[in-house]
Image (cartoon, rainbow, N blue to C red):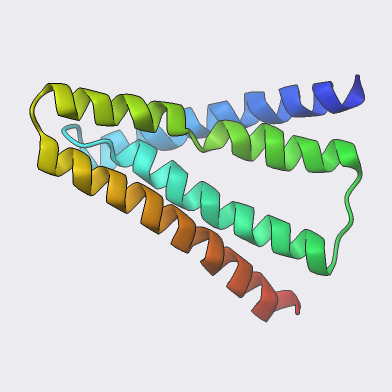
Amino acid sequence: MGLYLSVALGGALGACARYGAGTLMLRLIGPGYPYGTLFVNIFGSFLMGLLIEYMALKWSPSPEMRSFLVTGFLGAFTTFSTFSLDVALQVQRGEYLAAGGYILLSVCLSIAGLFAGLHLMRIVVG
């Protein structure tokens, strides 16, 4: 039961952080493109890289803490379900080029963010 509670608490906090980041991006950049979702997917992947590498090199958290951070917080913070909806809405509006660019940026930059996090943590800790 402890693992489920850890995931639930992390998920609640991650979802709130995701909402806050999306709201902030909307205020900073404005509507018209799903910048908030793009940001959380890239930044969340970067954070995942940092966290996973730190746990591999220096920190062995309890299963509850790992579940809280990885599955709960980061799982709720990054949001490919919203990403999918954003793509579908762009396609339905006939914005095929924007949808294709959004898919390419989201996937490639999120993976690059993860590798950047892994590399940075190796430099800092390793």
